[in-house]
Length: 171
Image (cartoon, rainbow, N blue to C red; front, side, top):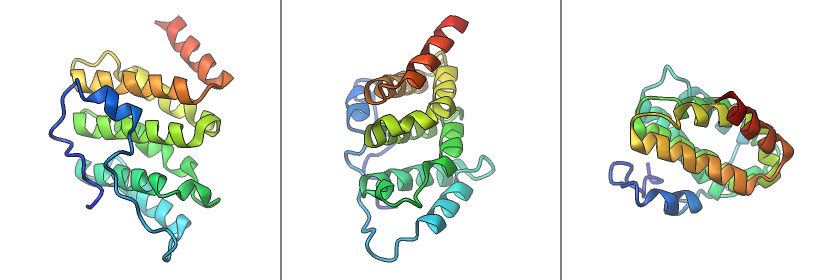
């Protein structure tokens, strides 16, 4: 897939903060003016994001979502993150560090792009991120922490605050 410009195997924990500051850097764009069918794209991606799919198929789907986000897919009313958010969040809770990292980067990119409109997805993503912040694998825990920080920064909404406080009180 052409959007794999950032090699998911070559990363270090030192590079992660910069990647989360600009999660779409190195992601290819797609020409959406040519035969872009948002409903069909969403359906295809939703099927690929299912946990029954191989992890590399799920990873490719996440990177495709990121390419679409970078290309302006949210400007199309029929491109609805509601259909994709549960699958992306499920990738964040996976055991594969590559899948968790890319899922976290994808959610961060969506939060940066949508701003307060991302608040509709807070209750889907934040529990998945908090679940992984204490994971023993550093890349998983750090990716989820950085995604939480990006969401807090980009989505200044009462739903964000409420969800963070709820998790903080339950710990």
